[in-house]
Image (cartoon, rainbow, N blue to C red; front, side, top):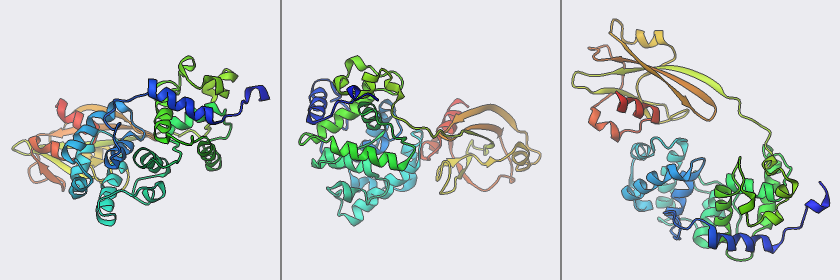
Length: 343
């Protein structure tokens, strides 16, 4: 790339981001304007790979039910999973619960005050730890979540392939070098806001960007060329059959998923790998087929068929009978909750 397209970034970059955040950034999100590490941590975990609009309701419900770290630590994992149901990436909920208990039991109910200390807790990686440390304790430390990778990748026209851990380490070094000497919390929020509202993945609004004059990708004329990440997920396809079995009083038979794998720890209808196995589990039963469900996960598309039996006598598989009005107390995956609501 010609040298003319490579202006040096200096303290002006951080100062510009800070000034823009003051005037044009987001200031009214419920986890902002606080230095409470519990609230910031909860929002950071929920926002991983999830849009703000989706998180808002979950965040408020969690805080209403568990206002502090001790309250969440005292909850059961099933209770946490039930509140999390529908938010996806359920390992976050399991780590959330484990982290709350670790803070309560190992740290006297107070979060560590440094990014290094925060990284020792379950489910808190380098970027999340840095965000909590910057927002709550003023530590001068860089974050590198998806939005920030995109902003810095474009500003620097960073050609390293972020599918490579070595290239990602290099971008971390750049992120640290660009930190301003003060207002790191507002700078961090500014980078997040830029990535979420201006420097978006598919349609960056370069005309509204405060650092356009410093941005090498914009000068090049192809901002969406960056950041570079060549490795693509190979999507698979999975097909399973659910048995919706109702008891004489309308109860529904549920089984809990294994502690690892997809939907780990959640409750679902008995699930089978093919239709013949599902039918064999209730020999002679009158099974009503329901419309199939197509559910997209990160790595594969899941087709779920449902066969409903109004009654099964004594032939039901092992599981737990749950009254319809009590199903809300169980951690059900989103497609099952929708299925039950519709039928």
